[in-house]
Each structure stands twice: as structure tokens, then as C-alpha cells.
Image (cartoon, rainbow over all chains, first blue to last red; front, side):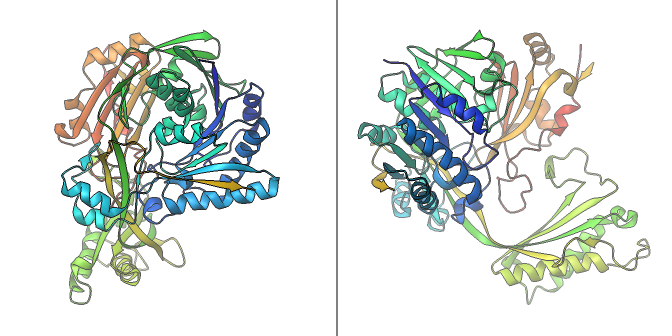
Length: 452
Length: 104
């Protein structure tokens, strides 16, 4: 096996101020692959449910242009995973449009494989009926309604569909929902490197400079695969890879630092060693693949209604002391409206920042400070209803009078005009589960597109 | 005695998927890591009590020697982005760890 040099310029396309100079230094090393992850479920269910991107077009296009220009001028493959933030068809198409624009503006011409990761709901229902939808990482049991009400469902691909595209000579690969480590592992696996070692490298690289010291996600990380090990280093001369920074990365975003499950098996790092080979380079050895039944993770979100919020600052000492009474008064008002606004048609919660909004039931110190930020949060069947409920709650709290409250011109300070803000559709995750897929390629649909 | 915030280099929280979150405590060296592990201040029971959750909702407590780190994973009481959630990323749930007192 020849050694492979793999470059990752950013932890997420379009998310941050990508260090261009660090990327250019990496290009001078003669890479064999440029890759980047473009998404995650971290930002919550809205982006998947509403088919919205996580990042701005300006920032995403800037990063894509940087990567595509480099990939084409050096003639090395470029792989983008989880296009558009969540990797469903609309997210992929959003990214595809930008890539066509970039090619036209920069005079680039290439063949690109677009790999769609959408799973039809009726297929998921069939799996559900056969009892094959398995909970993962605390997800509650899947339900038929949850599946039927989902807007988009995507299955996170492993290396296999990417390897097929590389075998066919794809110059650029735009993948829908994709395991972040697979983006970088596909080429080494195709060339005969051990799968667990390749995926561990991919896991480090997908976060770019997060595993450097000092840590920064928007600077380039380079990996070199050589035989039974790989080295990693950042190209920014003010950062380095250390045994501590690289081994600590195995902790990031997972339950078990020693075992990382993926499609078809587990990357086992219980025997992995980390060696500081020079001041800024770490060698990793010993990660290995443990094959198992081939299962894919499916993600989906479903709408739960429309959200309206009302923000108000609270600084008055009396209000702060009687906050619970004021909220109780709002609840009583809404109960009084029950004929026109049935209880089942909305849900309301009162976030109290400065008291227990962030940690909620886990807050050890639920006593307000000298100031509280109140966010009245309503989700209802219709937008207008959500706004009406938020208004009623806000104005009840604002105007509630009692001898203990000295302020007679408002207990709280609504922050904005308009004081109630309509946020549009709200979603929750309806699927975060595994289903069996004995043929790793079967759920994926690849199209070759001539770009430019 | 020393508070954990004086002994750890990193104390953080982050989602593990939408339904769980992990608390990570990373130390600079093996000796400090071992002191904290041996002290028994970070266990399923102590974290359950600190966070007012049932011990069964804490799914993993991993003492990760190669990284001189302790990782505790638990079910989020409210899944990420669900109605009434106010911490979509799970990134601000670590504060109670700062004040844990660690014996010498």
C-alpha cells in the first residue's frame, strides 16, 4: 500500500472562519484526498424537519469554492459528506446548486457523484412492522405515527457507497447523510488499509483542528496513512498535535471512547497507542475493526406545531421574589380561556434565564439572581394560536397586581417590538434508530453529474 | 481538599445524539486523574445525586486512562430540541461538576 496524505480543512463546511493559509500549507504536501463533513444532528431537529441548512450560503460557498478549486487544480478527489447540514434530498440539492455556481464562476469542469441517502417512509414502516427498528443511544421506541409524520428520513452511509464512487473514478463526491469518519476512511479502505485504523483516522480528521493544541475546528488537520499506523498534525505552525490532544479526541461526542459503532461493525481503540513522533506530530497505531451485523442509523424529524415566543427582562425585586405567583397567574388566565383555547391545542413553558432555564430539573441552585430573562415559549396547532397564547401569558404576568408588587406600570420588561415573535414550524426528532441493511449499497442512490 | 475545577483542565458537556449527553472531565496528568478516580467522587451514584436524576438514567461511567479523562453519559431529561428544551447542544450542563470537592 502506498502512503496516503489526507487533508481536512474544517470541522464543518460553512460553520466557521476557515483558516485558508493552513489549508494552502496542506496542499503543498501533495494530498491524495481532500474531505470535509458538512453536517450533524447537533443543531437540533428543526434543520432536518424543515429541510433548512445550518449555515449561511455565503460561508458554505466560500468553503466549497476553496476545496473545489484545490481539488481540481491538484487533480485529487474531494469528498463532501452530509451535504447541506442534514444530508436529505433538499439539503443535497441546496449544496449542488452552489457547486454548479462555483464551477461556472471559476471555470471548473468535473464529474461529480451525488449520493442520496433518503429512506422512503414506507420502507421504514415495513422494517417497523417486522420489529426491526432498534433504539439507539437512549432513543425511545419508534412508533408508526412518528414514522408517518416525519418530513425527511436519512440513513447515515458508511464507506461502501463512497468506495463505489472512487472505484468509478469520481473526481468529486457529494454525499447525503454520511458517517463523518467514512468521508476520510473510504480511500484508505479501498487501497487496503485496515478498516478500524482508517475509520479512527477519519474520526480525528472530521473535526479538523479540534484535536490540535490549541484546539480550533476551523483549521486544517492532515493525516498520513502508512502501513499499520497513521500520523496526524495540524498545518498551522502555531498549533501542534499532542498525545493528550489526539487521545482526548476519542472522548468527543460519544459514550465509549474505546468503541465507536458504525455501519457493519465497531472501531475498537482499546489497544490503540499514541506516540509523540516529533513536537507537533502524533502516530496512532492499533485501532481495529470488529465486524458485526450491518445496520444503518436512520434520522428523521416530525412537526409538532408552530412556535411563538415572548421575551421579557425582569429586574424588579418584587417581581423576582414573586415570579412563581406571576407564572401561576398566567396559568390561571389560560385555564380561564379553555373554551376558546382548548388545553390540547397548545403547550406552554416559561424559561427563566438566571434561575433554571438551562439546566431545568437538574439545576442545583434554582434561585433567581438580581435579573431574570423570561422566555415564554408556546407551540400550538396554528401560528396565530401560539401567538395568542404567548400574548395572554405575557400580559397576565406584566399586569398582575398584588400588595407585594410595588410596580404598578408593569412587572416585566418586554424586550422587543413586536413583543411576541413567531418562529414558524417546530419539530422534534422522530427517528434516531438502527435498521438492518444486509446490502450496504441498497438504500443509496448515486447519480453522476457533469459539473461546469 | 480541592474543587474539581482546580484539578481538571477541561470540564464540559455535549450531546451524544439527541437523547443523551456526556459529561467529560479531562486532567493534565495521570497522577491527578488517578487521584480523582480513586477518591470515588465521580460515580454513577454521586452524579445521579448531584443532577437529581435516577441512577438508571446514567448509562455509562468510563474511566479513560489513555486520555486521563472521566466520561459520564446520561439520558437527557428533555431530548435535544424537544418542546421545552433550552439547551439544544447540551453544552451548558457541566456547572455542578466545578464545585465537587476532591479529597487529598
